Length: 203
Image (spheres, one colour):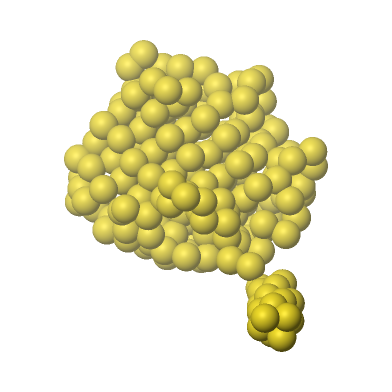
């Protein structure tokens, strides 16, 4: 019996050692949510950078407040997704321009013409371009404001339907067939933009 216990203990030690040496994938919890950004530098490895925004991790968020050129900067997910739920915590200054781009056709060229964009743009008066809208495709009424506080976008993309909630309130519910699959991206356009916990659940 003692010999059996010794063998089992040895196997457990080996298993623990091997598992501790593997590269850990994005965290998948019991509900199926994959955490792609958790406030740490290490979780930026789940993203590719496009453009010249000065992204940095500070106090549990990834933030930017300037860009080198005229083109916005993006953090683009390394994986592509078709049907999914997305949760993103964000903070923006009142003058910021940002957004969350989904099902992007080209991961190296992110635009509101090649992706669906859930906009973050308090100063834009047009309901097709304000915070809570899907740019060009779904206007938001009434127009919410996100500046100066932490907010949560919850987005469901399934088939040809995109539903967008801001802080628990449905802002738009779009049916469209333009883009079927692709990565998603977090944008820095202007002002101060911060993102904290970013999670996705494939459907």
